[in-house]
Length: 563
Image 1: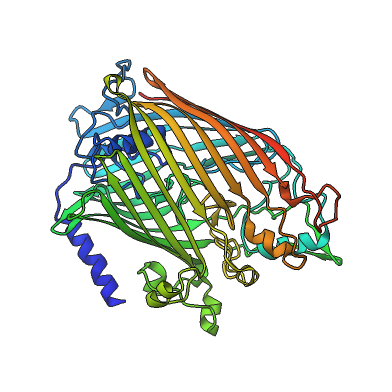
Image 2 (image 1 turned 135 degrees about the vertical axis):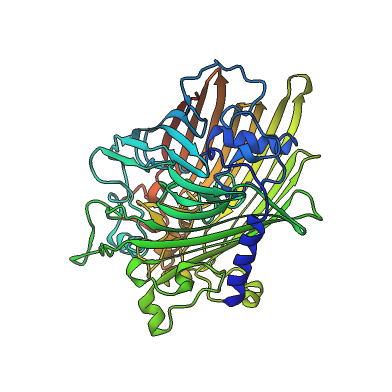
């Protein structure tokens, strides 16, 4: 443990010894302009030292120094305006208006979609409105950007209907140990979050403070194993680099957080289900959860464009926190709950290693992330049996010149994520990803998974092809998404009926288009859900019967105004 502490201290000293400009606005995870910077990096037009594995990023600190974080395209035509910018007489205090955004989503049949922050899985119409200010004086920055969500939250055909009691019993065996409700109550849903807000002290390349911003750790684009914008942001203390820190062996980026997670206070299904007269729902402890995590990314100076990193998060109930290993994730192996004292302490841990390799000459990138959930094996044992509680994401993207005179390109992207366990016995033992018998809310915040949005036991394969020109993008997306295969095999392992995987086949058209100070975005997606909710055409006949299919239309529309 002492070696780990000395390593962290050494990294901080290296960071403090490097010079940097003061911090600018962070770029919200999932923003249209964020992907513009990543695409520009493929073309060699943005700072190639930025790994895009520790987000949000601070693009104004890149070597390319764009004139404005939110107007990165030098070819943009914008309306000049001073209404959103104010500076004190002495120039020490500056206040900027942050972009105002409105995003809407509609599902025609059942909930679908992820990586949408405060939005909830719901049928019908929902919208999120956000805006705010950014203030800076000296080394202090304050960003206030709350988010307001309103959702119709319409009823839909869900697992509460057309299933046998044994299916409900096994469903609850798993979902009693994760805060992942199928529907967020029976009424209209509304909430106000702090959103992408923060208060920071910034010194050279180091930034420290308190934040509720969404985080994204790892190189994935559609899914991340540890941190993503699938759930609302949570309040956390942060110590992070604001730019890559160059050393004699390469550059480093990193972040250390400690925060508080919240419960949704909704049951897995509404109303509750019963089995032999007993209520299957076991209420979760009404106790707040403490989360701490760290990520370190290294770019070896001998291999340009290569980024290697490790990340780890762990959570405990707040009243069980004690000792430095609880407050600081030191990349130690997980301690199994076999010992009595460990059983009382109740800790969950996720660890991942990842790489991203950027090839600017080929206008391409390839990336990979491999993680373990509550793996009690040491490093050697993990290498010898890597499939224990593992999950992974890999993908690649390439820009192909389409019209050099007009700076147009075709962007091709492929990504695969697998969270499914390789043994039903592990699911029965509670080893499914993000599910926990120790921390019974699982790895969630306000009822949504903090990591990969496809959820426990999910698998997905994605293909995207887009035309891009600056901030403008028009594209198509094809996906195959398998819902919670772990629960599926657990439910049907006695019968041997493995013919009804719940699989979503979808095709979508999407795009972003900038016009003066506006950015408009949209997505139209047709989804054919095969064996929806594992239903059979003959209710309660669960053996070798044809499944029920469902069609869902998913639409997203958004608009952003930049000052």
